[in-house]
Image (cartoon, rainbow, N blue to C red; front, side):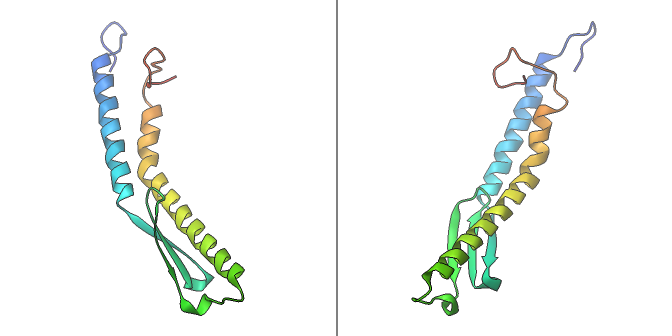
Length: 118
């Protein structure tokens, strides 16, 4: 990347940035198409969310449906959705973590270029 005389090869830096951006877009698309689940109540309530945290489905075991105790059912639904969302967040960190780290590390400060560096 460093040219003779100490200058940076801007075209190479830009090419690397474009490659990283493409990998990031691909990873985001993959996440959107991946589903993860979360459960509560020992599996009585199961929530399925996409990798980008969109709720896709909610399954409730009829055993937990009690018209006299709607509050417990509500709590189980919230817990299942939170569990699924946490699993989606972990997946996102696994998929995008290395890419996001690559955007900030190893590249010089390009503060004069919008979107690139400090």
